[in-house]
Every structure is written in structure tokens, then in C-alpha cells.
Figure 1 (tube, rainbow, N blue to C red):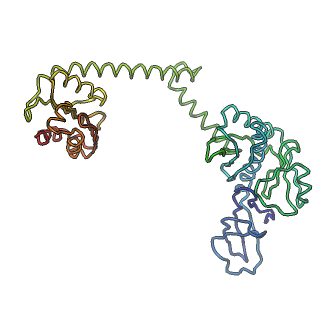
Figure 2 (figure 1 turned 120 degrees about the vertical axis):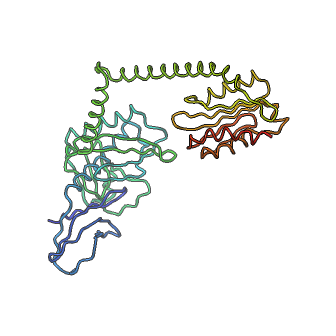
Figure 3 (figure 1 turned 45 degrees about the horizontal axis):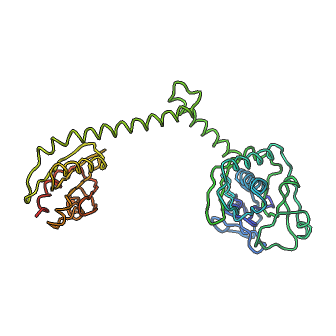
Length: 382
């Protein structure tokens, strides 16, 4: 049977009803319903063959009930936010869908986790109280004002309005949409995100009912998966914190080992230096060394050689990098520029880079080109 209370937005962004219209046996899918100029507009997939025929309508009840849940939740959320944050909180926008709700409010700073927790607590208390909907249709707007109904700033209202109340001392707003008959239908309310979208405007996204249940189950499964990695899993937070500390310590140890490795290479590389264009040059292919340690190694080599040039072709984790160091005195005397040279060499590794005249780096995607890049250094030292 056709429900004669279509879901349309008033002062917010609600999703319209969907369903079917059967006109003389012809089934027409209703994709959306909208209110324009006090008329309910049905958006359909096609026009009926016999528009003047007898019409039977059927609303997608599941979608409507889920949307009602989230719509009523925005009212409870609005009231709870004002209770926790203050009366300056005003609705600045909303979107109500079957699977989630989005609610924008005026507030001058980030809503803290503690405040969000308190808001959630209040809303869920109202849900458990199973407060019945009190609906006043077509009442004079002055009567609604005297009753303390919330009105959106800038919204235009007629002489007669519809007032929705969930506990006269908690939530009373003017609204044109569909709502639950009692708050218990929401089941559970969960805030999933809070963010800033403009100066003085915060956005909250939340879920209820089926989606909230799915959310809790997903988090339980995630926690169970994390617990499975630990033999003693009574305090998972402590376990993860210990693991992070251990990870930091191992990274420091790796850095120490890399530093030792770089130091051990110094004598070996100095012994293999060559003469190019009348200056000592060291060029080498290195494995599993980061750029920071490579630069330190190059500085130590230049200190040991005096004036000179050092070029490293590094492959770390399958990624190629070129590091070129030139003594500052040579950049002035010969006009060499490490940034310009490394940019040309980087073509061999399908990359690019640059830097200062005395030090530059380049990254790429073709590690097999490192040897060719190193061999081409002589062409640029003239």
C-alpha cells in the first residue's frame, strides 16, 4: 500500500523514498522523491504507458526504516551536541542516508574524543529510553516558537509547521521528514568520524542500527586478529606499545650497522680511486645503503682525498638512486655542477633529480641502468 508520508528534505539533506508504481499492470521504478513548491515529485526510470490508469504504489520499506533511523539520530545528535558543547552549536548542513548520517555544526574548535564519547553516551541513553515520537502537524509557527522548537538560521518557514519531539526537555525541532516511532528502533548509535570542513564548522559522520552492528563486529574481528599475534594477549595495548618500542630499537640498530658498513667501505673505496680529468674520482655501486649514510661516506672519502669527485649508484629495496659529491673548490675551479651532472646521469635509470653544485641526488625506476650511469660520469668531467 502506498505510504502517504514521503520522505523529503526540509532544512537538511535527506534521501527520498524509492520503490515502485504499478499503473494498470505496468511496473515503474521510482528512483527518488523530492519536494518542490509543495509538490512531491517522483523521479522514475521511465514514463508509464498509461499515466491516467489506476496507480498502486509501494515504498522500499527497508531503505525507509534505515533512513528514518539515521534521520531521528540527527535530531538526538544535535541535542546532545548542544548539551555537551553549548547552545552556540547550530546545524549547518546534513545528509541522511540508509547506511550513514552526516551532520555539520557550528563550533570553533575540534571536538575532542572525550566530548564525542559524551555525546555518544547521551544519544545511546536516549535510544535505550525508547522515547516515543511526538509529532505536531500544521501547528502555527508562533506556537512552535513558544514550545522551544529548534529552528535553522536562514531557513524559511511557513505560517504552519511540523514539530518533531523526542522528550520535550531534550529534542524539539521543526522538520518535514520521516522519523522512527520510538528511539529504541535506532538500536545503537556510533560516531565514526569528526573533522573540520570550514572555519567554525565541524562535520560528524555516524551510523545506527544494522551499520552500527556491522561496525562493532568488524572492530571485534580486527581486535581478535591482533590478539592472535601475541601469546600473552590479555593486554593488547601494552603488547602493541612494546612491539613499537622493539621496532624503534631495531631500526636504531640497523642504522648503527649501516654506519659501520659505510666506515668499513671507506678504505676499500679509497684504494680503488681513479683519475678522471686530472682529479681523483671514486665511483661505485652500493647495495642496501640509504642516502643519508651514502652522503656521510662520500664526505669522509672527499676528506681523505682532498679535492675529488664521488659518485654512488645505490640500489635499496629495488629502487635506484644516484648520489654525486664534488669538492666545492672544484665546482668553482672547473665549473662543475653536481645537480646538472646527476640530472643527465639519471636518464639511464629513468629518473630525474638535482641539488647543489657540490652535492646532488637522483632517483629512478630502472636499477639495471645504474652501471651505465656510473660509466657515463667521465663524459661530464671535462
